[in-house]
Length: 461
Image (tube, rainbow, N blue to C red; front, side, top):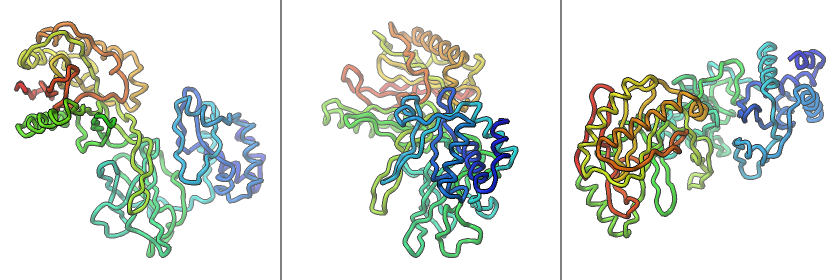
């Protein structure tokens, strides 16, 4: 930190502006943590534009700061091999240089940027009049919002999400300037409040002061990570897995809704007709155990131009534990005995520290059972939390309690699948399917508990 502060004190004029802009960029731009290293993408051209200096001055500042912080320039393949996510390139686009910094170097840049109140010279957009409120909604696979810059009855502002899950860019297809360019915006989330501002001034009659700016704003604290919980609904058929986001943020409510839809006579008749028509090739239905958010996007060409849709989703919150019991050699014909055994499982969940008492038991087939139990609090980093000792203890306890309940219900043999104790897993949701033997069966919700008033469905399919 002392070396970095000394470098800022020694430089003057345009070179000082370039060094300050580079330190600010390393400090405030969201970086991916790859083990003990911090990964970010940067280029000399960006520093020249941010500081308003020539490329030679920006290149000189680049070499000075590299000697001071000691970052590594690596190949994109190494970034992918370490688990990093690269920025998706548009047509004709190029990556900058891929930098790996140590945790001490990243902390030094953050501390110096905070102490010296550094910011780039082109961040001219004021916070108060430039940001406008948004209310995003999910339309299929698109995150949309009504544009606050024109009379927008139906959402026409398409929002793209950054890997941090709480900021991004967007485009409004209803706003256009004289050259026909769509309105480009930046947006961010502070708690439950979403706000956006234009990326450039192209809309006629836009309020004064809305000029060019960047998505990073050093005058405001970073928003908390994570988007609202969206559970993914997956359908696996011969064409592969198709995913779409649900409109229901609660997993138990989603399971109840799927059970009601699949339990009607119409659903049973359609399943039987499809089963006979496709020679037993019915799709498998899944739902994500944890809330998910998009982290990678792909471009689709539509009649209104190119749009970006989610292509990869990652878990945002560790909220549920899943136990998957499979491989039974025999099981009860009905669900009454399993529903009675689930009451003891419910009492176990209510008395176990770390669990809230809410759980659901889904009978996936004649020889399969899945149990999902809610944690007593949300954990914001699912991948890290699933590797803790607390997570392993709760997972082993849930497996043992679920297996005990299955034994009391009349299941024989079987084992607990350990692969489901990880972040971003999918479970079967109620619905008609073909089991491993090729027979038509219905995955159904046998028991669901809110902790005080259980919901029990014991009807046989």
